[in-house]
Length: 197
Image (cartoon, rainbow, N blue to C red; front, side, top):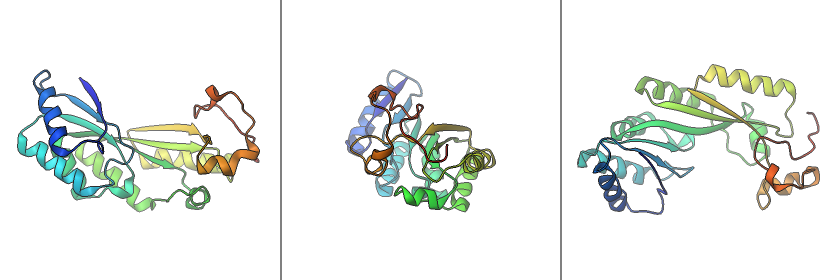
């Protein structure tokens, strides 16, 4: 069984109550926490994991977060509580490229540390990569692909940069947008004229 639950919107007691309910119907339910910054509030994650462990609940779960919101002790605790899959954005190998679109780069050494620890704990990893930043060339894209192979996540997902209306990226890309069909703003279809690609 899979259940989607918004982590931030519920108290720890409420989440434990929901998990306990699920365990009545499934021996070991699989839970997807739908929060792109699941570990942003470290104390809350620690409290939840301890509550799951102390209650004896047998679950498997996955979450999404930023790699700079993870460290080895937190991963070990999350694994004990049932973490089996974690997803995160790498986006580009170039820190300069990420900074130009107001993304906070994560040092390569930290990325490798976390992915290696996940592998050691048998936690599957999914890294997200993005093509089409304005400085991108075929060479920089090839470097990102090479890095994704080198990083060695369990899965790698590649998407095209998509400026969504109302976001800071949209303001930067608005003069380049060439697509008027909103259905095509799907991260797989080019929606703007790229200067190099």
